[in-house]
Image (cartoon, rainbow, N blue to C red):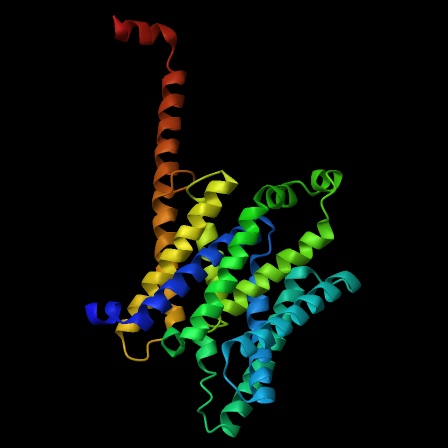
Length: 306
């Protein structure tokens, strides 16, 4: 294990997945309060056809080329969802489910074609469940720079993002460009998804966006604190999950990262100080005790004191 940690490539990969987890936890908090957790799942699956098409067109496996194709495909998916929601009676969650299934099915079909034409040596299967071991240093740099950019945009405009999420009317009154912020939010979400698909995979990147944010909600009512906790949970999940997958031979990274994120969720569900099961249990027990005391006549209580 120590030899793996001392390997410079492993250290770079661990750093990139940690930054990715922080970015996912940060954007996931925005998606949680925007009530668009399912959107991240739909766009993640919608990104797959773009990866394959970019590979088939340019015949290279350079990460920047592939994630550019993924980003274009995901944005097209977002436009389709918006178009279906605004021009038909179909609800947004139904539209997301439709785009998720159609784009993912199209992506799998293209993946089969790509594997046959390249003798199954394309390595594109890694984009399904993720494989950090297949990343080279240029991939790590690309992931890290984009993830840091995403986090920086959220941090710099944090006050505006908070107003945008919790009081759109007030934000409009302040002169904030709501449509522009909708576009920037979508771009940030898409960027986070496409940056993480090689490490986590198109199937599981949505889990890294959703689970840390939900877990953080069990610890605080403060939006700022929630974003910080969610980023920490995401970063820890990315780092530890990647390390475990690096120990094995050919173990996919995504499932281990998601399992770690799920572990943080279970801990938060039980021990979270705001909504955790244990806290709710003790609060209910204390409340019942107070009800019993209040139901006892005052004269009886005075006699007991005497």
